[in-house]
Length: 205
Ligand code: HEM
Image (cartoon, rainbow, N blue to C red; front, side, top):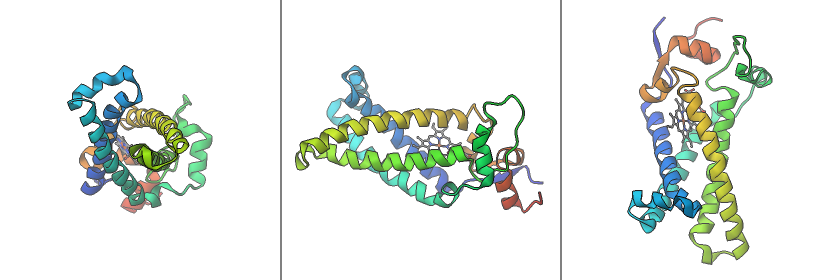
């Protein structure tokens, strides 16, 4: 048994880190637009005007790269089977004191829902962002509704991303190696994604 197996190709990892970099740039440039409390963040970008320009550029980058990432792994994240249902019923074992084992494929249902949520949030943030970008071209109520929705979606996305980063790092040791080096330890794969492990290696149950 080899010690490591491939989980993500170089292009998949580069795509994920482009999404991540544009997401955090949007977060930092967007905070000052969200509330005057955070205006100090504008100095990081050489003032408000620059921050808004960078927000627009990284918004386009995030929109395109995030949707591309979703369509790239749509097959793996958009179907749920019986084993996924059991994971959901037992809440992934996160709330149990006993060791739990689930027959999970490449992604668990939590990861699948996160990926679907991010794709939906990308669409909503992108469309509402366009209305805010050119406010004089659209009716006032559409722009106002967009401002509110954009802000709400932004807050929800941050909450989900905080949980994602925790689970992908200290919450599940070994997971970050997948996005850093492209491969993961076989033991990690057998423990967290046994069905995917068998698919990749051809190992019998
Ligand atoms: C410092 C920040 C981040 C870290 C450390 C991180 C880490 C990771 C890791 C290790 C994986 C692979 C999980 C696995 O192999 O099972 C992953 C997958 C993924 N990441 Fe991130 N990520 C970060 C930020 C983001 C952001 C900002 C987004 C989107 C806005 C994002 C979206 C995704 C998606 C959709 C997947 C695939 C499905 C999933 O594993 O949930 N990530 N990330």
